Image (cartoon, rainbow, N blue to C red; front, side, top):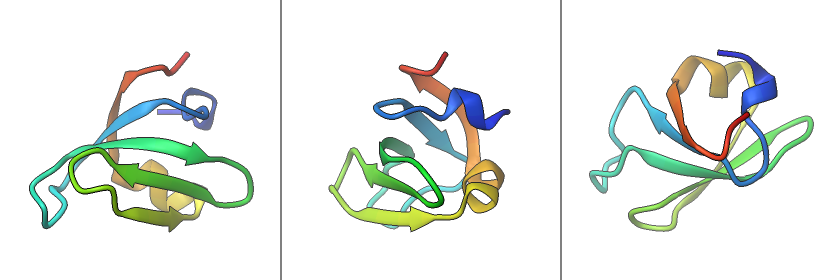
Length: 64
């Protein structure tokens, strides 16, 4: 996994489930921090690039 794949609008699958039951997240902001939104409940979380790379299993849509 590379940060180049984590672009704005990409949908990623996380290794662990969110408490709402969802595993799919959309990247809504990139930069020094990444902001991701749960596609099940709408919760928004900000992560550092290292944290995001550790939590993501794969890019499902929109990545290059």
